[in-house]
Image 1 (cartoon, protein in one colour):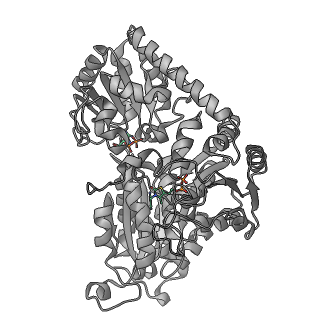
Image 2: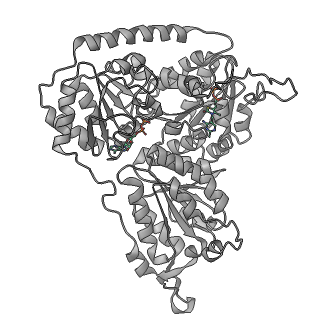
Image 3: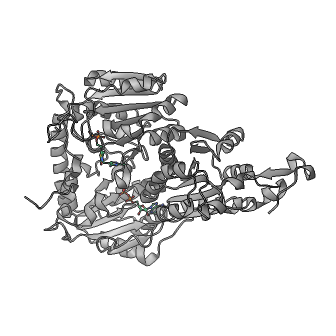
Length: 578
Ligand code: ADP
Ligand code: TZD
């Protein structure tokens, strides 16, 4: 290990761990770090900023981690989150695990305490065996002990995050590493610019044929687009596939906008009809997890909750082990979505027959009925405002600003927004993802604004907002064009529960009634608006998007509106005891 004595070399001939990490990140096209300073990484954040990296500093590491994760989803570069040791690391770890679960590429870099003391458990400042803890929650975890290995460590982290199924990677950098010095030229040579970190994976010709044969024989085919398809940036190929085959499609939440939600082949408004009725379903970057009722049960036309509906499945996925995880996949197509969809398009030829007219007709009929019903509901103007009348406004604002990013969390606030607010462009809708996790709101909003430069609209349940609400200071500090709309119905889900014991404490789901979230952002110089009608909400949102000023609108929603857990009420266990 090349520790250079100061008297033997001038500063310019020597580099150190701090600069090698920064140089390695820059060499690989990383331009932004999301983090929170403290021992042992405070100087690192300063030096990174001095070296031209954008360093976005947060109030809590979980929000920095969520920002990094979604930046990874939006850019196909691993988002970088930087934290201090033990508690900071643990705060960031939730976001790392969430990134891995959602297949978002990110790297959590945490400083760590002295190895010798940690390993002997002698009680160091913020002592913790971080590598061991990160391993089961990440796609890969690495530690670098010597300055000359920084290049390899960063390269391995980048490759692990991006290649195959993307995910979260942990990189452990002990405090001592930053201070190590080595010859600058040798240091420069030790860095690696990663070549082709997410190599194309071409599907086999037999697998392509198998999939097409199945699709060709279908009488009621359906395509499901997932967030893997959005991540893959194969937008043109996917559009061609949908339009050339004429097959109706369902977008999963974060795949909304891959084709505009107003596309005539979208079956979203007839979801509960097409899932049980379809005979062949092609999954494109979507897993048959709970969000798709595991591919079985009543949703899919099965008799009981574990019965298969009898559909045949084609699954396009980069992970070779995803198929058959819930039901039989008759035609797995393993490869990257761009390559798989291109191969399908080539093999389809030019005279592909559209699906039977009675299938398309039946879907169109359901769709128009449901759309008309929804239009009726949206047109109502109840007092107090409810989710529908408020979202009618959001829907118009998003339609008028199709480039704006939409961040969304909550229960009812999530479910209603997903179904009511149409998206027009790919990768604009960012939400709670695979876990349905609360707390992504402000981290995602910061990253969406930083990465895209576009206005961001965050539709937040009042409970959901609380998980990351302190970051409104961050929005103001960086003057980000984020308009947060808190759907304030006084609690987790609704605000109407009462304490069954009748004591002075309110029910566990109830918050302070009539809270003024708008005052929070005013404390930091942002714009706060209290909106009790759709007209007030519309005016405030229009102004926020136009001015690009950090804004928080406290949108007062009828506390009796919505349901417990939104659309997933049935996941609450109910006791068999009567
Ligand atoms: P959704 O929640 O939208 O249904 P999921 O997160 O369940 O989507 O599924 C995304 C899937 O996409 C994962 O199984 C992942 O392996 C896959 N995936 C991610 N990136 C790619 C890619 N570039 N090519 C192919 N599959 C991908
Ligand atoms: N903690 C975490 C990290 N994630 C969660 N999903 C939950 C708790 C449980 N939870 C939900 O699933 S939704 C939700 C919680 C606490 C909040 C719902 O209330 P809200 O939304 O105010 O955000 P609505 O619109 O009033 O339903």
